[in-house]
Image (cartoon, rainbow, N blue to C red; front, side):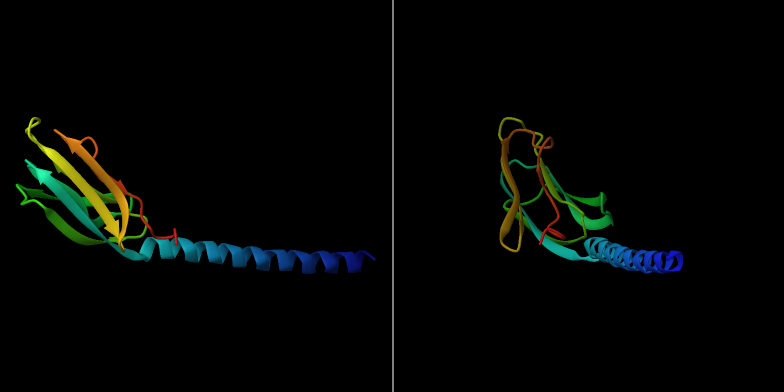
Length: 137
């Protein structure tokens, strides 16, 4: 009886390990896909008296994206970039003239608006930050 019980326990343990390994492999595949997949977003800024626009340009690390700044942009301004994995999209217009600026920023992905904000005056405190759509599908 002991030999039978040990064999049964061994088979059960092996089956559990196989199932656990499969689940773990699926989790790793999901994380790898989330880190390596890319997606495109389009940043848009409209309004007046914007001195600069900073945006996540797709470089850097997922949670520390590199930022590009355009000084004295012509409005309306539009830029499409490719981001990776869980990297958030972000665009921040800045206006130094607090009295004359009215600004709207928008981030779209495949026609869907990920983020949109409108503000007057100095807009650096907000801007638009959008979550990555990778893994949300």
